[in-house]
Amino acid sequence: MASHRKPRSRSGLIRTSQAVGITTAALTSVALLSQTAGAAPAEPKPTLEEVQKKVDDLYRQAGVATQKYNAAKERTDQQRGEVDGLLDQVAKRTDKLNDARRELGSLAAAQYRNGGTSETASLLLADDPQQMFDQRQLMSRLSDRQKRAVDDFEALQNEATEKRGEAQKSLETLTEAQSDLKESKRAVQSKLSEARELLSKLTAEEKARLAAIEKKKEEEAKRKAEELARKQAEEERQRKAEEAARQEQEDQNSGGSDSGSGSDSGSTDTSYAAKAEKVISFAEAQIGKPYVWGATGPDSYDCSGLTQDAWKTAGISLPRTTWDQVEVGTTVKTADAKPGDLVFFYDDISHVGIYIGGGKMIHAPKPGANVRVESIYYMPIHSVVRPA
Image 1 (cartoon, one colour):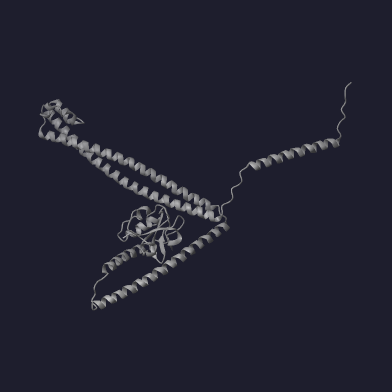
Image 2 (spheres, rainbow, N blue to C red; image 1 turned 90 degrees about the horizontal axis):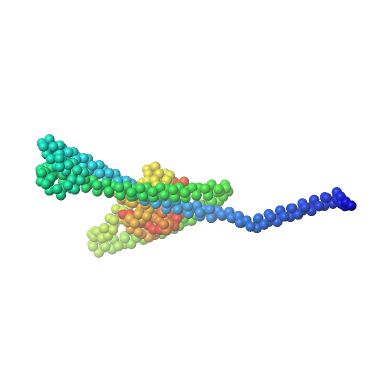
């Protein structure tokens, strides 16, 4: 006898459906909670101060890469000049070698027309006559003129081979320098692009706050510059007072005659001041021109390009990079800095400016900025150098 199940009521079906829905929702919630628990927490947005520090660091790293670029470019230019000179020498020796070869051919042809032996002609036309010199019977048949022609040919051939070898080595060095140049260029561009990207993500409000932070930094640097200016002015006043008192005493002791004491020191100071005046005058004329990494003027400059060009007007040839410029001249204390001195910054000596007195300098700051006057305390000072 077949069994018959009692059909479920409508209300029972609804309760079953609701239970299934609740179970599914619960399982979905558990899964979502599990995923959330396993996911890495989102990184907090950097503070504005952190962004500024990162941008400053990137600009400094770009400055280091710029100096590497400058060094590589200088090395490349020098190597290219050496290669060109060697290739010119190779070309000249090749021309002389061809002339000597034609001379040998002419002698061989003349000897052949006069009934000379084919062995002698072979000797005269050989690529390397020295290899045939052991054949004494042939050498005995050569005239003095023929022997000189052979000797000249051999000497020129050796010289040409030597110069070709030098040129090849120089070309290999040039290739390495060009590779360094490209790598340094990529490094500069990479750092600058990263800095620009960070700044581009700032909101208008954040940019305003960043400008306020920058202004505060500038004001602090200005305060320190004014403090140094007052100290230097006071020291100069005391120096002049002491010098006047000493001169007066010397005049009294000598009956008013000029003893000339201290003339060498005064002459040295005057000479440096005259050079510094030319340097500063040139630098002031460049104010407002844009910073461009790797540039040496006249329309744009990087930091060491400006100092190099400025001191050139005073007859002093500075090297291209900050790392080499810091080695030229005499290192002095910051408190003893005089107009014209070079002020170097950061532990890696990646920036330089020209001291103009009063705790201020003229420098080419960074990409996006123009040559300007600024406090030397705007950046951490490494050293002060007097180039002449």
